[in-house]
Length: 294
Image 1 (tube, rainbow, N blue to C red):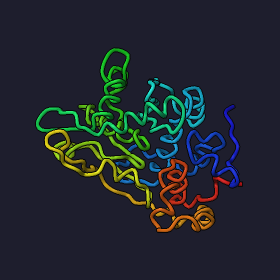
Image 2 (cartoon, rainbow, N blue to C red):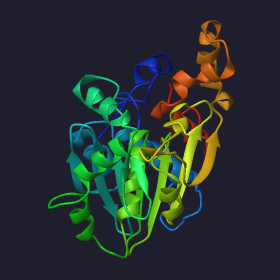
Image 3 (cartoon, rainbow, N blue to C red):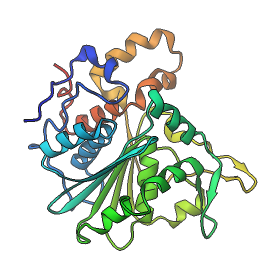
């Protein structure tokens, strides 16, 4: 039986950077089931996908255990040096989750190298996308045994829900753009921008773009134009802003550090991008704010 401890308040700092080893995933799944036919923004679905996007930072073994415990069937996983992707399904829908940027170890170095490749890669019809993100996407999507082939083998009648935090959100957008002839929905958390205006204008799938107040990553890359090398970066999707200052327990932490952080924006930036804070916000929307702590 898969079990975890509920995270204690005193271990909050230990879990700011994923993976969150002491976190209790899907603790209220019976009360807030996933809604696979609700394509508008849904608080239940935002909570599930925030937790899955954080879970994607962990090892394939741990991810499979947690998702199986939550009632999913494991379809496949792809682990590359700079990113990981997990595919799970239930009877009436599929979930694909991408890991975001690692902040330590060999993977962290590789991820930073991916993130800083802000020159754009040219596709057709004037579309240009972040070179580093597109290279990471190419390593996992096309080809034998890759994500495209795995998706082809799944039921075409099931909608595909794609999610990711940080760089994982960028990969979720590129993947959704490449899946044709089946319903695709995307929830991202703290995702950076992916491409130019032509890219954004070409997208048609539903994307719920969730951003914590004060998270600096969604402002990146900056919307700069440098000849044909970089034709600006723009966001796509329906924005949902979450206000982390409304969370009483995290507020205590922010007050403790406010002495050496001058502006309100800087006061929250360190925490705002953390996937555990996205999960805490999503659970607060369900009126379940205290489940993370003893």
